[in-house]
Image 1 (cartoon, rainbow, N blue to C red):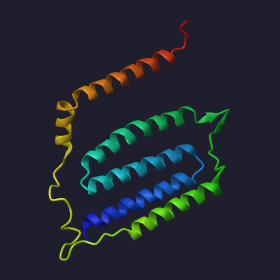
Image 2 (tube, one colour; image 1 turned 135 degrees about the vertical axis):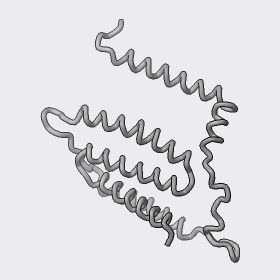
Image 3 (cartoon, rainbow, N blue to C red; image 1 turned 90 degrees about the vertical axis):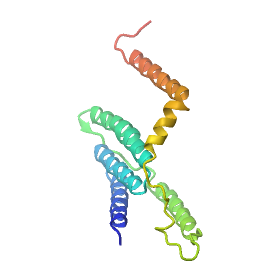
Image 4 (cartoon, one colour; image 1 turned 90 degrees about the horizontal axis):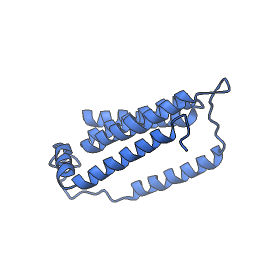
Length: 174
């Protein structure tokens, strides 16, 4: 068993265990930290699969942006009338049934897929030959071919930030 496969199993188990912890805990802050560990484990798996750009995007967008926003929101609103916020599982049975159905369907599709390789070719041989990072190529394409959409997206985000700052001011503008 190779070292990469061992790390894949370790990060996979860590992602599944932290996701299960996130679902099982009643403390919202602990659930957010469980989400952090899950997202970091998935980024590590992407790195093991030579998907550098997807891993960096996972870290920047989800861990760096969305999760930090969730943590700030939870920490700033953690006290409601002197008590810590606790989550309640209202639809536990129906949610478990839906999750089991989705898991069963995915397991069936994965197990019934035809992964047979031609004679004499192993899985290691079928890996992509070019395992160099694609981040440089994607960056060059973003600033050359897709410069206009990239700048339009940045302007839209700037306008949204200015609108949020305007709405959140204390004195109401009339």
